Image (cartoon, rainbow, N blue to C red; front, side, top):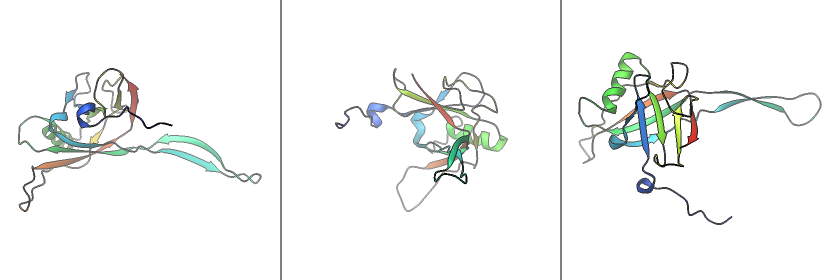
Length: 164
């Protein structure tokens, strides 16, 4: 197979993370204040059993496990934005819903939505609701000239992908 010439970088791909805190259909683009997004692995359980006859196991797919998503952002100190919404979701125990576009939102690219709704509209507490696991706190280090950032660990039920 020849080496691919179809790939994306930060500029050509324009990654985007959108979130929703109401369960409605309007999402907010947080890309301008985010540094990185690590999607959860959401491993599918697979059961296995051996019979008395035969050498190989019989295997069957099971349920998908929850996984941890990690979002790292720039601390702006603003009274609105992803940091404030994630902090409120943590403090109140309320859901957040996500749509992730690793190569941008142009036609033909892929979007991953939390839950099993590939269309990407927010669902219910049983379909796509993600929960902030730890209070976001800006990291500050007097020994470096770094920009203040924060990290948010988020428990996610899984993501479903679909082409735009």
